[in-house]
Amino acid sequence: MSAPLPPLTAHYAPTDYNLWRWTESDVDAAVAAWVAAYVALPEAERPAARAALTPRQLDMLLVFAQRSAIAAVRAGDRAPVATAFDALSAVDVGRLVDERTAWPVSALVVYAHRRLAGDRSAVEAAAARADAVVAGAIRDMLEREPFDLEFEGGIREARTPAGTVFLMDDGAPYQPVADLVTIAYAVAEVLEADRYFVETIGVGHELAGFWLGHDPEAVAAAAGQTGTVQVDSVQVEFEHYQPVAVLVVELANADDAELVADAADRVDRPQIAVASGRIVAVLYADKVNDNEKWIESRSTLERLRPGLLAAVVGHRPMFPST
Image (cartoon, rainbow, N blue to C red):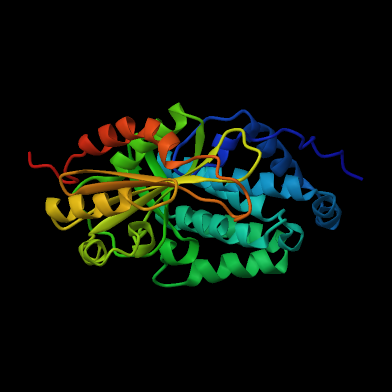
C-alpha cells in the first residue's frame, strides 16, 4: 500500500478562478504536490484515490489545470501543460457539480499543448490514467483539425492590460477599430473600486434591442455595431444574486453612438449609459427572481456614471499609427 496522498484542503481565492487576469496563488503548489503523488500511485490504487475526492476537490483540480495552461502560455513553457493534463486525469466528470465546467478547461489545456508544441507521449500517458469520458474528449480535441478554441471552449487568447490572458467569446462578429478590451479593463477597475467583483470579461457579445427599450431608431443604429465586449460582475457581499454588467460597444459613427446611449439611458430599469465618439457603454443590473426587490436603481447607479464615462473617454485605436 502506497503512502497517503498529500492533503488537498486549501482553497483558491475567487480571483484565482479568473481567465481575464492572472493572480499568483500558493494553492497551486499544494495541488501540484497532490497531482504528482497521484500520478506516482500504482495503477490499481488510482481509482480509489479519484473516488475519494469531493466535488469541491474535483473543482480545485479543474482550476489548477486551467491555471497551469494559462501559466504555460504566458511563459511559453511546456512543463505546466503536462501537469495540467495530469490534473485532468484525476477528474471524475460524473461527480462534478456541473460536468459542463470540465470541457472549456480541457479545451484550454489542449490549446496550450498545441500552441506550444507539447510532448504527445506525456498527453497519452495522462489520457491512459483518465476516466473514459475525459480521455475521449482530450484525444478528440488533439486530433481535430483545425482546432478552434473559440468553438471548443468559448474563449480566446488575448493580449490585454493584464498581459496574455483568456477572454470569454460569445461568438458574435468582433472587428472593432477601438481597443474595447482596454476600455473593459478600465470599466472593471470602476466596478471593483465600488462594491462589485468582476468575474468575466468577454468579447463577441451584442447590444440588443432589449437594452434600448426597443426604440426603432436606436435598434437600427445598434445594427451597425462593429464589436461589443461585456464585463460581468457580482456584489462582493449580497443577500440576493443581482449581478451588474457593462456592455462596451463600438458603433459605426458618433451620431449613432449618441442615439444609442440616449435610448439606453431612458430605459425604465436599473441601467445607465454613456457615449464618447463611437463608443457606448451600457451598465445594467439584473436579477433572476422577479419577486425580489431591486438592490440597485437608476438613481443609485448614477454614482458609477463618472467612472464609466472616464473609461470610455480614454479609449484609443486598437492599431495606432506609428
